Length: 205
Image (cartoon, rainbow, N blue to C red; front, side, top):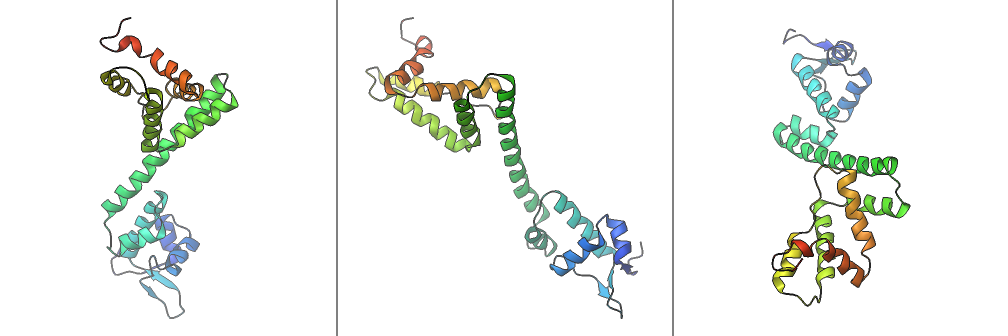
């Protein structure tokens, strides 16, 4: 393309894959103005504007908002910084979709009660920090007032479950079962101790 040549909006649409209405929309919203106007008021774009429109289309396909795109085009933020921000968002969305998939797979593959489904959904919808806090609270509740050596309590906390980044039926359902079935103080302690007592050093088997 000739750098000095100006192209009609129809030509730009064919070159960028954007619709004419989308190009007009981006101009009206202040994302990318045309290079110039003809005497009749028709918009014209040069090769640099076309390249920027192609970037706009790419960023929109990647989920960027108009404000973010304006900042990139105005060089108020770098393309790298925008990519870092949106990568975090995409990774968080992927985590949420994987968690939902795990719950749905459990429902379709196993006999699962409504209570279990509800609890699993709550667990997988939590942030990692919130979920860790919940497990910490559970262990504090289980070990509160136990007449045992403090090192044993520390050992119990070290045995707390760590849920994998890629949730699955086998990894999430047992955890939800444990938290739901260990609902009162003494049963909770039995649940917490039954699977750990044999593995703690210094305790008889």
